[in-house]
Amino acid sequence: MSADVLKIISPVDGKVYAERPRLNAEELRQSIGRSRSAGDAWARTTIPERVAVVGAFVDSLMSKADILGEELTWQMGRPIRDSAGELRGLAERARYMMGIAEGALADIELPQKAGFRRLIQRVPHGVVLTVAPWNYPYLTAVNSVVPALLAGNSVILRHSEQTALCAERMGEAFSESGLPQHVFQYVHTSHENVAHMIESRGGVDYVAFTGSVAGGRAIERAAAARFLATGLELGGNDPAYVRSDVDLEAAVSSLVDGAFYNAGQSCCGIERIYVDQARYDEFVEAYTAQVGSYVLGDPTDANTTLGPLVRPAAARRVLEHADQAVLAGARQLIDVGGFSEHAPERGYLAPQVLVDVQHGMLVMDEESFGPIVGIMSVGGDHEAVRMMNDSVYGLTASVWTADEEAAMSLGRRVHTGTWFMNRCDYLDPGLAWTGVKYSGRGTTLSRIGFEQLTRPKSYHLRLGL
Image (cartoon, rainbow, N blue to C red):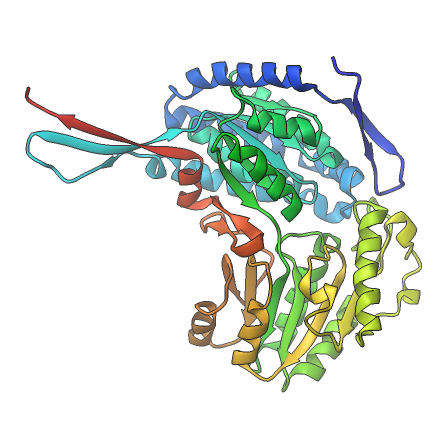
């Protein structure tokens, strides 16, 4: 066994929460071999058999949701009042994919042609490598792990080292579910060894990655060596547009939650808000008041609504974005002195609202990934669309309005993977989860997600010879 060790440093208290050995390249090669052998038999099972196993996996995790939620809080800092909810989200997504699997994976029979039978099957890639991040460790992993298994693939999960225990808990649940040994495996290993798993001959057959743009580029470079297909979900700098006809109270409440839930550490969280100038002043006043009601503190305390960022370096990045904006003329509306637990050196960061912001400021152009948001006044729909599209990202965007027709019209003009009306920061498993531009490519969940985790195979049969 490798002597290399990973350490999970809890953002709650800055102490080592757990340690695990990292696998080396040879150990990973053996894991891939076991996965491939086990996957050959798994691919021959029926879809109803796979659905039954995945259902037992979900039931196993849900029976321990409170325990796993507490463990999750210690690993990545989310308030304990919210952590178990991630397991409920996992169950929702998994059960939806279970429900559509048989229809989505069914053979496509072409119209009858004399003397021939023609059909297209969806066949598994083989060994799917899922590389998952720490911010929503169960939700991001389930997006590919469950549909990959339902489609007949074997899966190797390499989780973020910050939330390595989540991979272990998924492994335990699959063992309890009756999944044959080695069809699902998790590995703790370095970034360099992940690249080796992808680029080496005999390596994995597909990569599903959720993480940073830099991480996505590294995955792409490794995959290019073997022309592997990849699915890349790389985050965003997601905008919201508040129109003049909005229900202001409802919009404020949802957009505060959309920006500050999970301390803003969400790939589809709201990072920039554009408000029609006719409603700008009242929106900012109401929004700032609600943000000021957050309780920053120990995430293991049930009264806490805003926990620490995952590590102090993340807090420093958010402060750099805020400081750069202020130097360029922005104003901060939240007095951090009102948050007694504000301690950026430990990762505990008070929420912040910035106004008088402009594009060109880091807070409006880059992914801050923290409890900060910029708010701008706009002159109407045309300017709002232009500003929303002025970004290298395109994961989600939202409009807040009473006019459905206007929402649809605006949505056709905004460059985004998901367009919301009067909601944000939510993933519906029936819809394709996808992005454009630097937010990545490929799709998870929905019927289309099964297409990503299989390949088409055509059968052209000449009959009667």
